[in-house]
Length: 150
Image 1: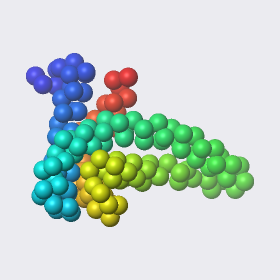
Image 2: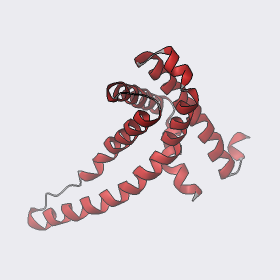
Image 3: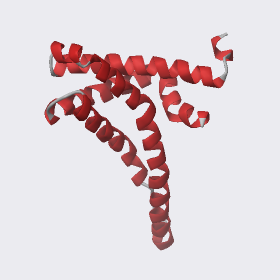
């Protein structure tokens, strides 16, 4: 029955589920890296960063993917014209850019130092990718659900 809902409703359900999961991950990361007090004080900021990480960062990285894909294909095509050995490695920068965006957002909204922000972002990113292994629908929502809505 749940899978028969309209696409916009499913999008909202996955958005809420993904935001809550990422917020819990970030709360745990802030609790472990910084302190229980910081995690409690910044709970609304953690929820905001989780929402940004689930909705806005994938859109930015998806748009950047298109640009990197075009540039990388152009460069690979030039190499193919020379000796047939061109590959597009530029597109592999996308997860790094997503992590750096998360790092900057965590630094601005949650933590005071770059060191703590780095560890919070790393723990969040690592556990999020573990969740992608367990629940691949979460990744599929982030990768394609946002673009299908527009």
